[in-house]
Length: 102
Image (cartoon, rainbow, N blue to C red):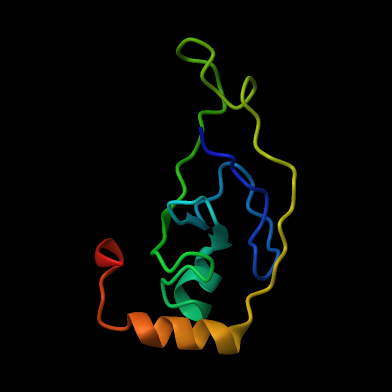
């Protein structure tokens, strides 16, 4: 299941479990919508993939204990600001390739 990381890796903005601003890549790298779209241009600096909205884990138990209370979000912060110069080179090398083709 998803780790539901607590904050943006780049700017460290809080991204609580129900945040509609959380974006993830297929490796669960987690960024806020502003960083993913405006700063990173939909290119994950860790893998080169694209981002998608992070799903919301149910807050209440409605089916078989599958909810935030049984499977809480991670509390481990991974604040690793992106090297924007290196990222610009990565993004340039991927320009023209849709995320699903990277």
